[in-house]
Length: 141
Image 1 (cartoon, rainbow, N blue to C red):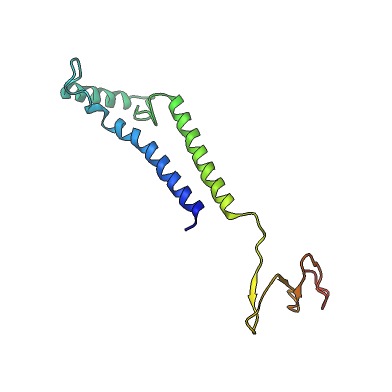
Image 2 (tube, rainbow, N blue to C red):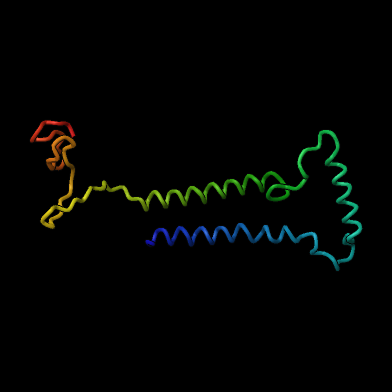
């Protein structure tokens, strides 16, 4: 694996862990204030959950009421922008790693010599660099 691929993999792991850690805190947020004064008891939380279900089942109520990424639309838009930037960076890294140089076919001769370049599709004669027509049969390459 070359250096560019390792850098992209490491960057993806770091960004993935940064995006995953806040989600873990949100998942356990309801149990964070058990001992605090004025916090809701388990029975009160169950009653609130039942009320949420009742409200969600009413006509015109859509969705679960849980925010997609946070508490408002601004957080959702921000997360979408961050994801687009990360994916754009990864695709740019792969594009840059692909290189822009023109690749040439390498063919081994019967005597062990190596030749590179283009060959005529009609007669098989090797063509020179920039040569558009075969010198042997005249076919366009």
